[in-house]
Amino acid sequence: DSGVTQTPKHLITATGQRVTLRCSPRSGDLSVYWYQQSLDQGLQFLIQYYNGEERAKGNILERFSAQQFPDLHSELNLSSLELGDSALYFCASSFRLAGGTGELFFGEGSRLTVL
Amino acid sequence: DAKTTQPNSMESNEEEPVHLPCNHSTISGTDYIHWYRQLPSQGPEYVIHGLTSNVNNRMASLAIAEDRKSSTLILHRATLRDAAVYYCILRDGMRSQAGTALIFGKGTTLSVSS
Image 1 (tube, rainbow over the protein chains, first blue to last red):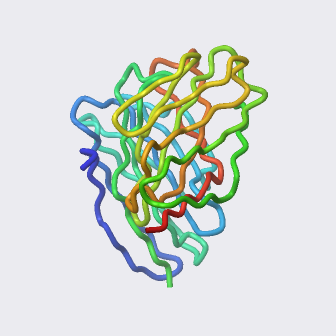
Image 2: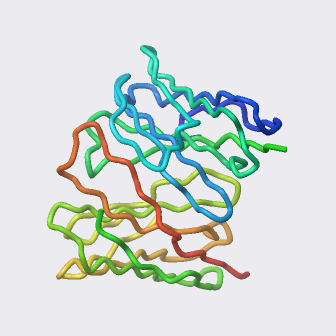
């Protein structure tokens, strides 16, 4: 158990819909990262938040958005869903002074299926 | 970010040592070498990391070449549970105190046979 909690574990929805994925980081971790893993793209970094502020952006689509709340949990919002958005979405957290040395702790992921 | 090159796949037998290579010829002086692995249907998990010296922990050993242009992850006795995708990632240690994201490549898929 990494200490990172993601909900829901599974989600099935239709094209055009909007979903929200939730992540609770490990106690004390201020950084939260979101990743998308699909069969053809591998693990893709989407976005990072640190103590409520956006810190880095990866390959995140404009239809996707995220935020980190004062209690440090984070939500990833996916809208106007397309079939290609079907993937595993992972959240990870790290200690605030991770820099290049600290490890990231990953949750078990949320599997999104768009029909 | 500097790039790493790993073999697509490797095979091993249970109870035998496994050496997983990684080339990173454009590594900078502040890049740490990180290894993560992803077991089937799970999120990635940290294995080990190092800067210049060889490192050991309960999971594995990391051997870093003197010129730092390559490294090897060593699993001393492979078990069936070690079958996973292993990722070698460079991470700049100077970039940010807030932490930097891991950029994953395709990694090496390790198969372990009994």
